[in-house]
Each structure stands twice: as structure tokens, then as C-alpha cells.
Length: 131
Image 1 (cartoon, rainbow, N blue to C red):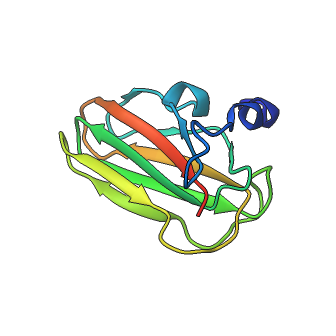
Image 2 (cartoon, one colour):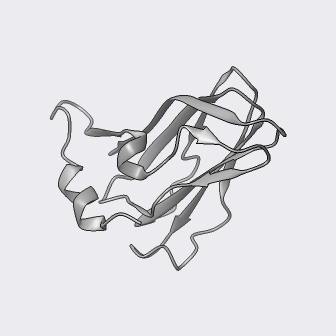
């Protein structure tokens, strides 16, 4: 897992406009672009750093799911409700938005491949936003 302090340092808004946003690319949150057949990739614990809203998007070459589990603590040990999920359809972009207003300090993203063949992820991005 990456050092949460490193993530906090990069949580600097892109622009100080109407709404603060921070895009986190796959390398920063440790989401691999390749998933083995019937396998999964799991991100590092991602520190929310006060951002309340988020959207995670990706395109998988195979069917599968995206699941985001939120936690009350920064270590990712105290669950905050059930995981948010969205289905992936091969070749089609999918987006998972934070759908409630529950407080959280960290999250973990899991992308699963339900196909027996390897999957490739493209257009992967986690966008944190204040609201």
C-alpha cells in the first residue's frame, strides 16, 4: 500500500473555481490496467482528505464490476455502510458516483473481471470533489 501522507500531498485542487476537484490517476491509487481472467485489482487505501463527493470511471475490455468500500477511519478498517457498486460491460465506459452523503475518511476500489479472459482497463480516473 502507498503512504497516505503522499496522497494528502497531491490532493491539491486543480483550480480554485466554484467547486474544488482533484483527479487521481490509476498509478497514484495503485489500480493496474490489467486484470487476470476471473480476477480483481484492488486499490490502495485512498484518503478522502475532506472531499465529500467522488466519481470513479473506467472502461474494461471485459464484463465485470466496480466496487467502492468507504471507511470511517484513514486506515480503512471501520466500514461505512455497504460498498457502492456498478456493473462493467466490456468496451463500455462505466461511472460509479458517490450516491449518498455518508461521512468517510478513506475508500478502497475493487475492479473485478467476470470473464475467463484477461481484461484491460482504460480511461480510468477517480475524481474527488468538494460539494
